[in-house]
Amino acid sequence: MKNENIKHPLPPFTIETALLKVQMAEDAWNSKDPERVSLGYSINTEWRNRTDFINGREEVKAFLKRKWEKELEYKLKKELWGFRGNRMAVRFEYEWHDHSGQWFRSYGNELWEFDENGLMEKRFASINDLAIEEKDRKLNS
Image (cartoon, rainbow, N blue to C red; front, top):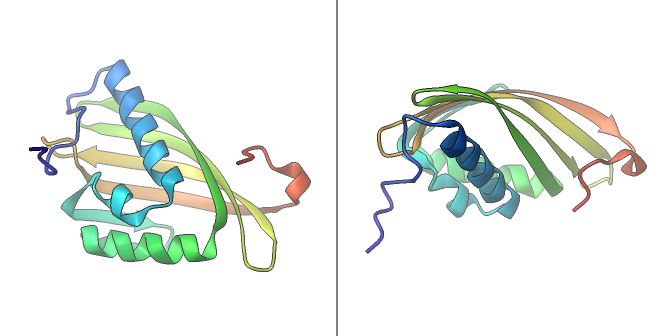
């Protein structure tokens, strides 16, 4: 039986396991499945996402559901910036459009902290949005 309270790879991270953890997060977020994404976070995870302060896995799921109802054709790319022990810094960019058809590129940085079971306890994201034309997209689906 699979233990849903453990999410490999576990800290402390090596370059290989840190890169794998970032790729797993990118793949999960690109699924646009709030349930799948939420399983990478601890039950009591703490987030700052722009001006939103989110506490706990259930709030994460609700937040992501609202996010992907607004951010259509969402496509994300993450890049490991650095790591030490159970912490990582990640650069990211993603593209999406709203219901009016306006495209955006959102980009920024995240700071992650993991518990001993490999679940993300803290996620602090600084994000900026840039309106773009569809022809200027870089992350085509």
